[in-house]
Length: 192
Image (cartoon, rainbow, N blue to C red; front, side, top):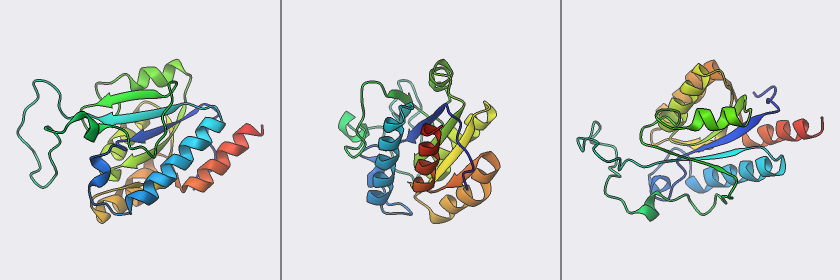
């Protein structure tokens, strides 16, 4: 349960990209995207930062050897496949971060962009729960950010991995709640 949000909280959406959301997941993707879009609208209304994180695995010079043959390979995908899903309406002022690994802080300017804006807390949502979201959460925690997890705005390929992150890992890193509860907390910030 989310008990409070920092006044300087940013929404961080992980890997909501055309090709990635087509991978079968623990929750129907249309539900996840609707919840994520609802969070975007609430953060815009509150005039708080929105971070759109995408993964581009096509980094020059990187090994083409796959560590997990069961996971889909994205190295040969066209740009459109890696574009943000149309359900997430981006704006010019959004912060756009491209990562090349699971975590959004590794080898990116995410920490600097958040610090530049005085952000002290983040709300995390996106896919996959046990990969991109969890890796980003661990790094955010190590950097001192307060974290809220929108549990109904994230999904994973494997149900047990999703449940492990939500029930065992995330409560040690921050607070877990649903989208509506987080939006309610945002509205309370605005009324202060």
